[in-house]
Image (cartoon, rainbow, N blue to C red; front, side):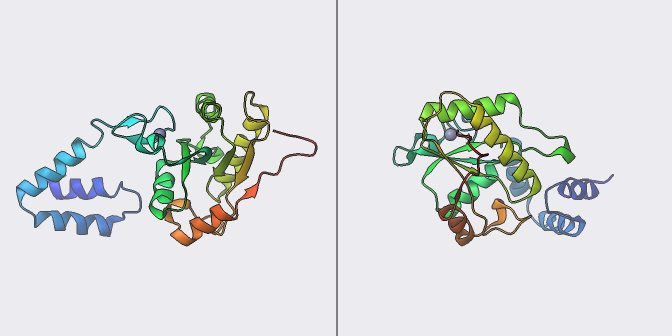
Length: 208
Ligand SMILES: [Zn+2]
């Protein structure tokens, strides 16, 4: 394949980019001078250099712990559990939340053969214990996978030891359309989803 076709095919692997957009991007790049192209190439090549997974929350940043976990002005008693870093970024950009996060880095999705690993659940539980959190907000997406992930986490929280007796477990109230996602929600929707979050429905007679 020639370089143009090669690059078009690379760009079509990006999420949400079809053949037409990929072609436009490549022809845009063809008009740029070689220095600019090399700079872009270098930025892509070095993207992961110096980045770490935060050992407290699973976020990715230059430092460990990440700036959010280090921020003394945040409410350290509230933990918002998100599926991916993109969801954390959406909340941060919306500026509607001032607690800490925990990034699961996955979800329960039978169709994709995805499960939450024991390590990832243990990582979450130890984070909650470490903070002695008063509230965990389960902010999974309003999709079947998000529901399954929510129930899996709820079970894990029920069985976990060493959490506060009065730990409050809540879930985002979706204002978000079913099948929608946190990643693409606007500020107002995220604000409403957080503000009107609901207490987790536990089984009869069960406590956390
Ligand atoms: Zn962190």
